[in-house]
Image (cartoon, rainbow, N blue to C red; front, side, top):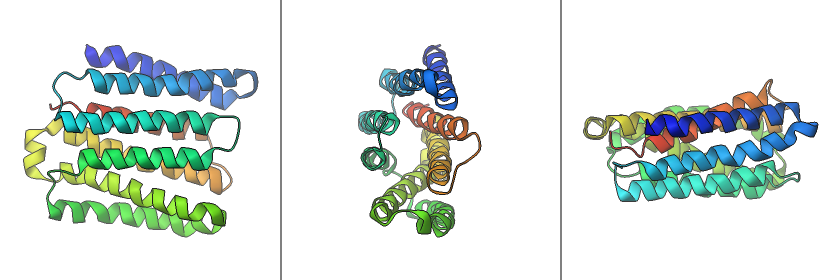
Length: 221
């Protein structure tokens, strides 16, 4: 019941934001309204979870969601605030890393890093030459932090002790990390490589699925 009471407004506000971004013009206000409110609802859900993995884990996820909200607002402003938005999300991922870092085995971490490094390398090989020189450093830093976040989330799932103790949490964390990589990859291709079909739908839907999964991972079971 608790999950449904938050999931319904998250879906509703997400759809408003996607519709507003897609239609644009006089309908852009729907995007400005729905985008931050969807993230606020996800943050409130994570704060309301009764049995958390740990207080430290919850605090780190809440900090990541709060900084994601800042990034949401910066990226939707009617000006080019891409770099400040990028920094806000980079710091958000640092907090997610703090949540995911403990407990996974060294072997699980190594195995989990490899596929994300391959994906990141393939994206960067195509996109980096198209990125303005002033943005290349921040983008590379962001990619490194994003890959670390996704890999550590996956490593929790690959660590038997954690998977047995918190099966709900580790599955959702791994799914959230993966969806974040998908969303940010689509965003990068849309911004730097001439556009992605249905970009508002694909980028934003995978983004909120990622955040919802990470919020769900706060639950111990």
